[in-house]
Length: 416
Ligand code: SF4
Image (cartoon, rainbow, N blue to C red; front, side):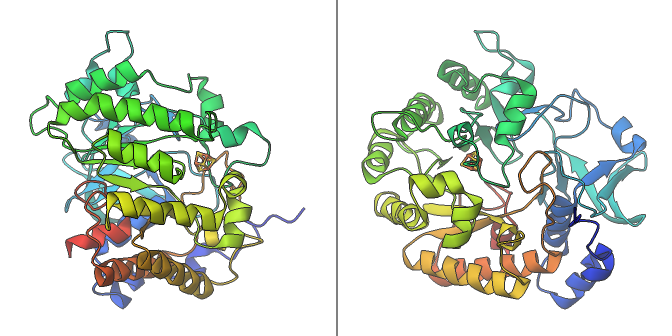
């Protein structure tokens, strides 16, 4: 059988290097380009870099919907300008050499081809990570912390995976769930108790983010997913004080009555439902479960309805940038993919919805595990394009920027 990875030309010859990109796009911050490339290619640690990890200080454990680990490597990295580099998950071996993290006894550095490119730090863990809930659950398993915010994954399985062929092709939630044999749902009491501990910490966490796998059940589809988020948001809201609190939910796209309850019964400030890819035909191929349940146009209509409730700049949709080039059904060239994606992002902006992109980190255990993400240049151009659309339409994206999220290169550009 043809091996699509081995058939590719050596990747360094086939695309522009980080140095060439930073020369060609001088307005694009070098550290954000480095973040993109490190997320795309992955990182490995030298023995010296691992020896510098202090598990009493650094974050080494994570339990989330996509990734669980308890070894002694850092969960993720942060660059000197505050740019966060997410390195969570097990990247598939797709032939792109990873960056190397090394340590000289004083500092850690990101290296490529043996050349140090930037100093990095390991994420530090908050004090609540050492505590347990009244029910005996370690708090680090309940709520994870980024430098910017608290993250809650209350449902760590996705009902789309219960029917063969319905899960999204880039997704590893079901693989991860099965590998770790964990319970699918967290207890709401554990979540409220853990957030209560986290917000007590000095300089504390001031915003919270919830997401998890789809729950299809309920009197109408997704009602049980809605009830879970309602219970959590109602429970943690008072811990932040005030009627509304800086919070973001990424759920399956709720119907208008479901969205109306979310708005009326909680202090949620930002709503997201991820389209993953901005093309109707590719959505059908890549996200078959979402497509059958709601459909591409139906998903967009629900996002637009959310704008009517939460307001402009408070509703967005996430894309796994690069899957639009997956073979064999994706766009045939980066130019075509870029034009189509930005055109669709603009049409969503017309309806009050902005788009944020994540780098497609090709994961072991996903249907797409033998694909390869597009070039660094593609991601740089996409980030510039999405940032330009947001500025043109006046979206602040304040729950998704480098201060409160840190996951998206395009919203990292908001600092400029
Ligand atoms: S909706 Fe798609 S991306 Fe989200 S958890 Fe389910 S399968 Fe994964």
